[in-house]
Structure formats: C-alpha cells, structure tokens
Image (tube, rainbow, N blue to C red; front, side):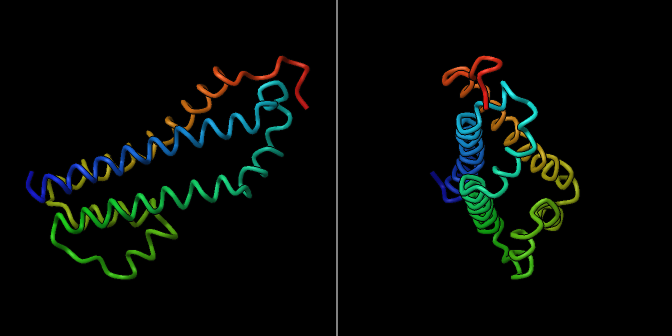
Length: 149
C-alpha cells in the first residue's frame, strides 16, 4: 500500500471515528436523561445540564482532535502547510474555517464537492448521535409516562 493510499485510509477512519463517537455520546446522553421522554417539560433544564457537562466537553474535544487529525493527514497528502491562524480558526469557528481550508486547497472543479462532503459529515454526526439516543432508549428503555422526575 502506498503512502497516499495509507493516508486516504486513515482519513476515512478519522471520519468513521467521528460517527462512532457521536453514536456513543448520543447513547450516553439518552441513558443519563431517560426521564426526558416521560417529562418533556424538563427539556430546557436538561439542555443546560448537557451544555455544562463533562460528557459534552469530552465530546467536543474528541471531535476537534479527530478533525485536526484529518486536517493534518489531508495537508500531508496534498503536501501543503497550514498557517497558524487557520489552525486557530478551526478551533474557534470550525464550520467556517474547515470549508475555507477545503476551498483554498481544492482545484476549482472539486471545491463544491469537498465543502458539501464536510457538511455531510457534520449532519451525519448529528444523525449518528440521534441514532445512539434511539438505540439507548430501545435497550435501556425510557421510564413509563408519569414515572419520570
């Protein structure tokens, strides 16, 4: 296997890892907040708890690290060097700077597809999280209506 093929395979594995992390975190969130399905009025309080939770922080760090791993492999595959400000932008405004990176590093006919693929991975990770929630509800089970807190 050539170095380019190995890099491409590892880039694909990084994307698959984003989906896997999202699936697991979705399941953990549903398991931690199973009472939400019996008591929809508790959703705002649960969202506040999730935003400040260690699980949310761990999820964001894991996805950011996977994003940087993918960017590093892509830069190596294309033999380019990213400037420091682009790395900083990816940390603080990922949804703006990753498409910018893709736009600047792809040939004119390939830019749109690469940017759409990025947003496809972004939306796919949200669907993976939802799938994890559904699986957790199916296996852990939600409390019956009226039994939630």
